[in-house]
Amino acid sequence: MCVTQATVWAPDCGKVKLRSSPSKDCSVYWNIPSGAEVDVVELGTEWAKVSVGNYIGYMRRKYLMFGDVMFNTTEETEIVVDRKRLEDIYEQLGDILGVRG
Image (cartoon, rainbow, N blue to C red; front, side):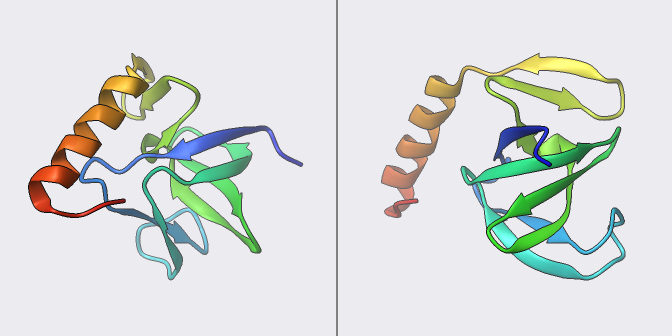
């Protein structure tokens, strides 16, 4: 059952680990690229159970964007993100580095 969809967001434009259980010490199923859409099955305080393709695993909630909203997991503070501005920054960074996402 899907609670909602979210966009994976990595601060360094990289990838976020999809883990087998909600712990940084457990195995990694897959590295999900920033910008990928995931189905959120369960949403906890620090971790979210997500579905990506044929994989179901856990991802830190702080790396998920719900529309234009992200959450700081330590304080439950809502952070509103200007998605268009963020995409522009990613594009500019790609131009500078000579890479495309």
